[in-house]
Length: 254
Image (cartoon, rainbow, N blue to C red):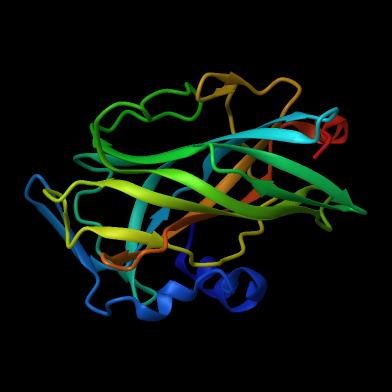
């Protein structure tokens, strides 16, 4: 995701910015990361490449499950790009999340609520993640993890015939590797909008779950961080429909 995309979106996504109160208390100095000698920072946000988000829905119950995975591409401090060092040259950092909730249609807009049964994690290891092969996201060393405590979002039709939307995941972070990050942190929201209806995810499964009959989306993410002791925690990713074609979109209940 280009820096200009989420910077612009942060100005227009006013509703989600109401959830970002803890950011007002963020420490300007940011945090640093030490990936076995590759020092990065200071920074106050992580930026992910376009990742895969699979939504499994149960129209009869109005419930869904979501599975998300992506690779970290960089960092920023006060919205300015930070040199990512040897990221994706000598090593990679991956992000995964699994969550569930309920959804309801309001005309063309589908609104959904995320419950407290999910989890999210960040891993550091060798360069081997592949969306196409659905592999390499769950190995390496866990450097941050937590339990999803709630969230919300929506999916909206766009002028190109696809869908766009956004989701905010609130997480209680209970694992942060102090050998990597200094100081350790909780996470907070940073709202942005990513319009990319033409992006195609080449994947048959996401986190082992088949895409057939479900919604496959391209998810563009940003995680803004606050040093402890800021208590609130949330990870935000925005999503745009991809790859299944018009018929698959029409079959979906979301």
